[in-house]
Length: 501
Image (tube, rainbow, N blue to C red; front, side, top):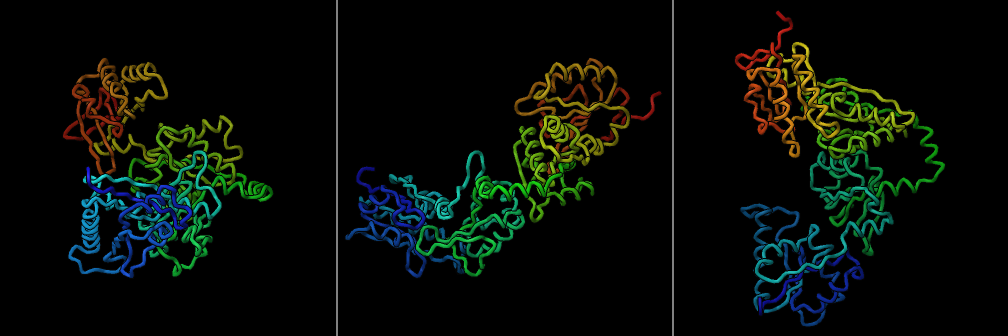
């Protein structure tokens, strides 16, 4: 790249020229060419922020957007017009770089944080030396002028564009502790609706032009939608910090008023809303908080004011403690499980934590759901028509030796088996071992139902035999039903007779 100019994407920070980094100010003053974006009126916020550091003799490249919010007659529509604009802008900057001139592209905030510079970078960085100088983001500035921390300790911060659909915004806002929603302006009503739906409107703040002389900070619920510009955002700061701001007498009164909360452990069934019982639907609608594994929480219809607490698949105990602590402070909490919560699911996890002393004063109820075994059986007939045994092949919570003894005992007792958790990415040998144990007691022709994602978009139900069962064809989303010596399979229909001859 000898003889070519250097490209710099320089973050200017949130608006106050004094919040620009020392490096950004130096590069602006040294550059041969200063490039900046503007609307068709010609004024550039980026240039106004950088103006104290400009010097005489610099070439200024004004990159004027062909459209901002208005319509266009471009054959490719708005996206086509903007794509052509970036291509033309990149060519103009390339002419300077080819001539050996260093180019600084000014960018409000941080260049790689929703910044316009990134479109120049992707078009030029493969041909020229390109360096990005980070800047203070609008989110950090908003937190600063609000005087509240964004997050602390293990809280989760979510950054969202206000252009997302309101239901998607509401889901994501309900699933996080702290959040910033950018790109307000015309999306303000959409964001307000989402905050209300997530139950967080009263916790949100509106910050406009943070660190500018004309900055504005007020509760989000009080803002007139007609007064909102593009350079504004919604902020949900650290909830832990907010809770400490409340004075002690008010906290005490709140706890005294809200004793006797409740945890309801709800079974969602194996798939979509068609498998949900009316009782479960009522409990979910009445809950103030929904707690559970992320994909299961996402299956619960969002209700205004309801807060959602999603977590990973291997934190059942922590999830149960969180629900019980919420209930101990007076809340009505729904803990959700796929299938039935009492079958290898959250009901036991919650009751274990109650026994350990968590959730003092909270009531616990269990609301059943259709099990995965019942759903799988229904697809092929009635393989569970007589005595059957339900086993999990996961050895994460119990030793394999115990699983093997139980498999052997169930096989000897001639019970139909419904096998949960047959395999996973890290458990690849257990199903083959289980098959071999059962073949000690069953004929190779014994029917086996392999049911995957029953009720879901990838449902696949197959009937094979124990002797031909291929463990490699089974994953964590499968449930297996292995017949007894009496189970029959004809033309894809599998059933176990109720009587023995």
